[in-house]
Amino acid sequence: MDISKETTAEEGLKFTRFAMVLSSVAPLFLLWAIRGANVIPDCYFIAGCLLLATLPTGFLLLRLMVAKRSNDTRSLVVGSIEDNRGHVLAYLFAMLLPFYRQNIDSWRDFSAMLVALGFILFLFWHLNYHYMNILFAIRGYRVLTIQPPQDSEYSGRTNIALITKRSTFPNGKRLLAYRLSNTVYLEKVT
Image (cartoon, rainbow, N blue to C red; front, side, top):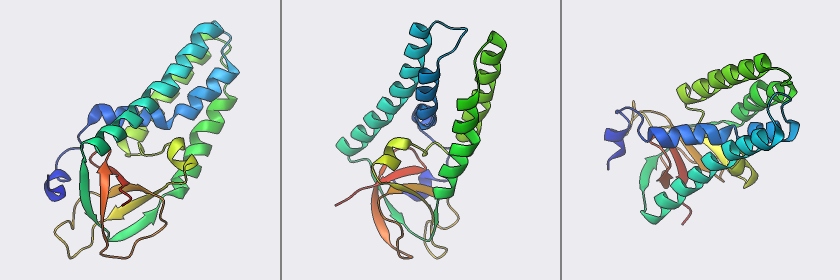
């Protein structure tokens, strides 16, 4: 499939994107499991948090395995690059720290927490922050936003989030990457 046709269409793989959004907040679910909630018995709350932390992350790993097995790759052309490490700081300070400090002592607190989580999930979905994942960071990957070069057949297309271990690419560099969603790719190391 030609990426120039693909990126003009609406973002595909909606369930995959949703699983990636949930997996990006997996550390929050782990923190909640550790803290607990006074209004819900620990056996249910901890089990629910652990499921929300592991199932979407497992689905992301499954998607990566399927992409590798089926060789679902795209050839990407590098124009300008933006390093998204600042997004990780915003992620940590805007979401993890305030939520970790949130006590769940009443059903009202629990409801407010769920509504706030819903807002954050919506923003992650809407702003395409579904590539934020602690597993990639732990394994030494960076997230770079790649804009196609102006003088290529890809110019004017959607920016792409590339998960890679490299910190930069020369302008005009062609590379091969596994497709996790229509805007998130993992560099194929050859």
